Length: 346
Image (cartoon, rainbow, N blue to C red; front, side, top):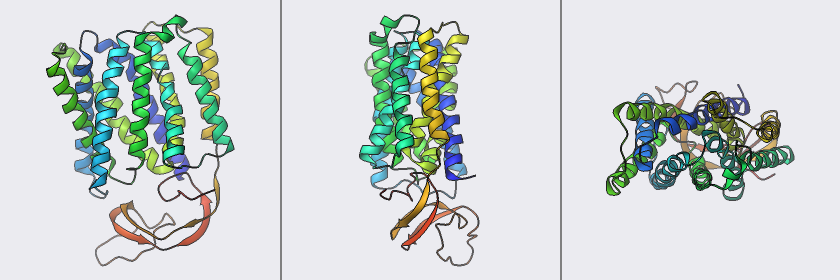
């Protein structure tokens, strides 16, 4: 499986898991304060991250500056964003809340191109325009179009902007152990949200609701975030975000099953957004390019065409392993995305 196809599969799985959770959070979070809801969601996600980090022995651990980036991501993406989402979902329909997620994809692509300098060719640019247009139309596609300007929907949109900044930050951590990144980010978010809930005397959910939110967090935030980080590793933050535009559809389908009614505009917006996703998924990008000399650490094997260094005894170079290693400058051509080995100019 190529990096492009592997990244596509992981991004699709991540989007479906995350998007389907939105109506469920609205259902099980009813009566619970936003900070309490956020704390439970990310506590569930932290449990998944901890389990994954304990089983991954061949990945590079986060150190130094990476820990600071994880801390910032934990604050904006695992504390502020889910609290805004929980608050907003109690003030808008499940369908409107799910469809407002479409803004995250476009915002992340813009940040990845501007801040991470990822390459977006003409085909991907058209795909981004389509997903952006779909996002705008989806915001007006609920059962009551005027609700597009409700405080609840705007809170969900603001949450997506925080998540876009979070995704851009984690895009710089793609070479590190996704289990440990997931654990530290989600654990920090759960602690910060829990402290905020205690400070403002946030309403607490019933036991059954709390257990449901923990489970939703484990799957929709813990497992989904791990897949998202692995997709970013495979082909970059911008392309991962483009495919993550599928998340609103997963949420919309669950919302419709639970009783919300779509409109004709919702269907048209869905077609536009699916066109954008199709353009991205069918993208083929490959050319001769230069790899400069560099030294870094991440999990790798020696059958990927990029790692040719020698090892001492006791290391199976055909199996995935992690250590600090050097890359000499070399030139070759193959299909690739915007992973951390392919940040060259075009």
